[in-house]
Length: 216
Image 1: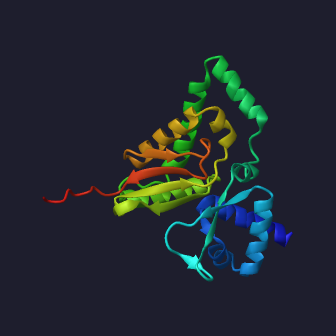
Image 2: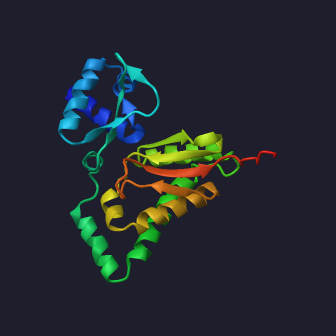
């Protein structure tokens, strides 16, 4: 049972924070590198995670690039238990009968209402993003916040989507979710990638500072 729990935690961390290395996982989980590598090997064999080249110059051993890992589509789906093929069929039915847009907007309005009170309206944007990420994490979205290039933006990353199967059938869901984030944060945001679109993480870029033009 403990082994299964560690395996689940490894997969969950990779889904929420990937791409990440075995060394980072070992430190985060407080287990031996050998123990982590055993779980990583099993998860790779099961098709739940995949190796990804680590950018930059970080190396290990005698010049070999460090391996990093991301969750595969199957890995993401293995974390989802609340939705099934029945939900996907329901989405198709609503689209066929002209009710899908109404359904999507209503469900995202519920999501927006559930996180709005957790986001302080008078705080700096970065603090608002952190608060939104924490509120979404409580709902199973495996969120993290990462700095963007130049320090002018941050990226809100969702390593897991509880409704991924629905979003794959209805891209309108991701579009409505992006609008909801913009309203909650009170800034314009831009969705860069989605799990439903085949990426290993949903990424939304959010401005936190105004770039000052260089004087020529």
